[in-house]
Amino acid sequence: KKGILIIGAGGVSRVATTKCAMNIDTFEKITLASRTVSKCDEIAKEIKQRLNVDIQTACVDADDVLQLVNLIKLVNPKIVLNVALPYQDLTIMDACSQTGVDYVDTANYEHPDEAKFEYKEQWARDEQFKQAGVKALLGSGFDPGVTGVFCAYAQQNLFDEIHYIDIMDCNAGDHGYAFATNFNPEINLREVSANGRYWQKNSEGVGEWIETKPLEIRVDHDYPEVGVKPSYLLYHEELESLSKNIKGLKRIRFFMTFGDSYIQHMNCLQNVGMLGIEPVEHQGVKIIPIEFLKTLLPDPASLGPRTVGKTNIGCIIEGIKDGIKKKIYIYNVCDHQECYKETGAQAVSYTTGVPAMIGTKMLYKGIWNGKGVFNIEEFDAKPFMDELMTQGLPWKILELDVD
Ligand code: NDP
Image (cartoon, rainbow, N blue to C red; front, side, top):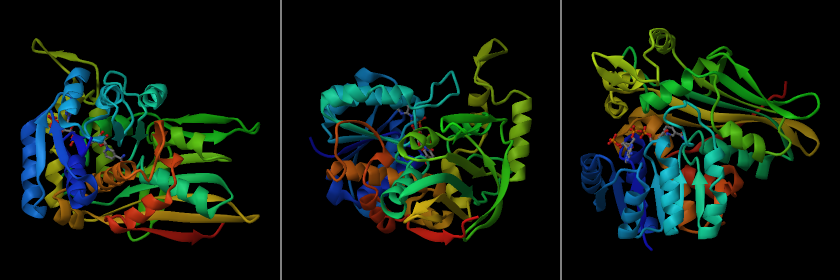
């Protein structure tokens, strides 16, 4: 077995494939496969021009395990990186365990008909991976991904006990459209229009989920190098694994920034039913409203050249070190235009694609080992943190006053 097979050819894939090509000494051979092979060819052509690295391309429907198994047998890679959509996680995982190949993804499985995302079905494949003698790394993007690595790094190196974590995700980029989403509109709008949820321990010390209305809790948070931005509490998938894996935790929440225009548009679309995931009949044809909306909205990949400004994603972590209360802010700032110059994609794809490559590299080089299904915070964070510094996502730590 040799090389990497990347599945999916959207914005995140463009960055991950470019970054793998920049690390060709590690990955040896790169194959890029997706449903629309012309998108793979386009990325391969750009990488050849930019970096003079050859990428093989192939066509695959990743909803079909048999097609995936045949492709994996043909390509014979050491690892598969899934940067298609969360709907394909289970089929790609099954194809990997059947062929005895390691697996990496950036987003947890989402049932196409249920607007519900959780790790349950992916964790349930642990035994399957153990028996095949291979490993799956779940959620190696930025959030989930780097945020989990930040928490693990704090737990392993900076704190004796962690009590509170707030994950703060700010995209202060401006693309000039009244309304557009920075990544797949269906996934993005389903996430934002759902009820919010966070985890905390009750007075008996039992962890429980507290549900909020969509965008009910707002804080105005000062993001270093960006400024004060309205930020809304959302449910985000890393809360499920971090609340289990960070011992001693009392509360974990996730906040994301949204501009007023974005929220007005989203509310309006929601009110008229355009975010619906159930088919409706229109002039004798069945259409799913949110899929039709996706057709109308700008392709996230087209936002790259026109997006200016920065992202700042990080974790505010509070706990105890040597018997004294301690609070830190660990974050990365990324500039949309700099990402575009390097990879042809904006910062949201960049901040996902770079960690996707790094997580894959950790497994490929045997720096992270094991058999079964793992979340990113279960591994030694230090080597990943070192790679972030040199692969385009440098991080900083601020010491904050404890309230
Ligand atoms: P895009 O929509 O831009 O790209 C998705 C790609 O997957 C397309 O090339 C698409 O092909 C392909 N695809 C879809 N269905 C299939 C299928 N059945 N078989 C083969 N290929 C398929 O998405 P992004 O690049 O923005 O996102 C990629 C992933 O990254 C998603 O899972 C997303 O949730 C995740 N993500 C994670 C983040 C994090 O921080 N952890 C942040 C942002 C995104 P086609 O062109 O033919 O439709």
